[in-house]
Length: 258
Figure: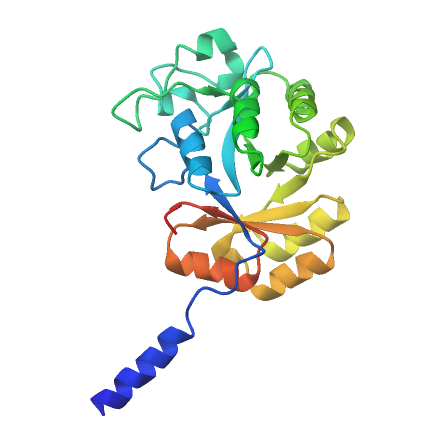
């Protein structure tokens, strides 16, 4: 009986290998993932992700008071730095004095995109960059969005065919459609069917959802409507298997060793 049980378990495990992933692009979440020794969005994390052979990297993007795009995630600086307030309330010169001191032994400078990404694009010509745009406005909303969109247009001009933008705010994505019509836009959602239908109706390029909210039927529906699918919250074997089994186009890895 024990032998039969062992054979049964081995048969089950043999069917649980990774689905074919040849068409799925591997993207480093925050550069090297949440499980990396390097702080997410830091230059070290972004370089390490690409040096590890990934197809691309994802980074969180915000806008400074003088229209510089930088890599930073939280809505306020005090969460990771010794500075206070919103990124959008400070100039680039001021942001340079606000390194990330809370996620590593050594302080990590905030990255300026128009300085680092061209270097990475030259060193890793196969890679692309997913910009998760965080919208934390200091001041009036629509002028802020327009200024942000123009900054992305300038970066896209400098790095053609290298950028993807994802965002939760549909109004911002629609504004980007006008400012930078060649820029692929992904709607960052929480409900698969709702996000797919909204993205298709708005003629976006794709959707971004958590891997645990995506099934094969969802991805099939998205593909039939001409959308690409990117999955995040992929931190281990099972979430990776789930994303690949669903047939996503891009998987944002929190552990790039997988």
